[in-house]
Image (cartoon, rainbow, N blue to C red; front, side, top):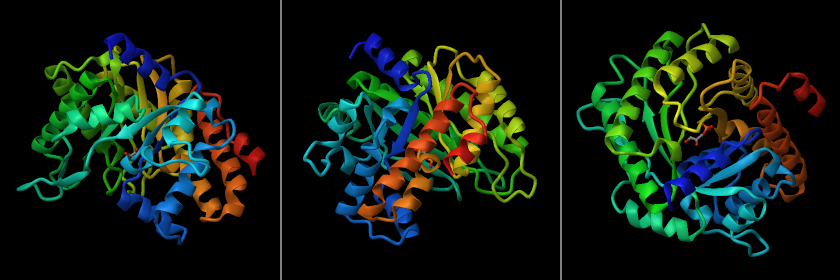
Length: 340
Ligand code: 13P
């Protein structure tokens, strides 16, 4: 794929009014999600759940792309159509999670680095053949006593840059995801400081590895207070700090920033995105690539039962449309009340 083609895909991933659905839960993560509604994580239930999401009528109005997991990109809907085709028929771009998850860094208690570079060149080729046009790699940075260390941020940034360069070579647009976890009791100031450092180091490594910035998407976390801190920054403060941090670190050549939700409630994730867009215009598109904040209310309504599919789809469509409105700062609380 030429640079021009990578750029075109990257731009359509962050098209106006649209964002990305992350539906790439690993086996461990989907099991936790299914545990929460007391259903078993087996192949049939995983297929039924993803089919419920992907076949929601009109979802393409708000969703530009979907990130799939290795099993899901090889799964077909109940009518036999492979999931990547179910999506592309609706004009939704299929993507794929290619990292193999975080492992402990020896000598650095409490810190992790993401694995998955070995054999990545050939996996990229296979995923292209299966219909993927973009990829995702998640790095995890934890805030705590004396952490993150430079070693942790550097190791993760290096892996992200190696991954991004390999994807672009093989024709996939890389989503570069350095997630600063919201776990902990740290202040919002501390989160801003860590996020700024993480992004600076990440972009330095992307530059070293000759990653084409116009052909990638950044997926960061928002600058928020630690989950266990009794003093929580408000919506405006989160939006201001997050945008300030990104302006200091993300080159304007990057076409779009698509946030993860990271454990925020569905409504907070929408409100934060809305407030950031209301402060625009910005040098890049400011969008979403949520998993939990798009899926949780629908998952709870679905409960693993065919009879609940249409009500769950209605709820999923509503969340997607709220985030679509937030893409241009046009979301408001009344939209929630109207749906209730
Ligand atoms: P959350 O929106 O649930 O944080 O998930 C996004 C994601 O893809 C994490 O890698």
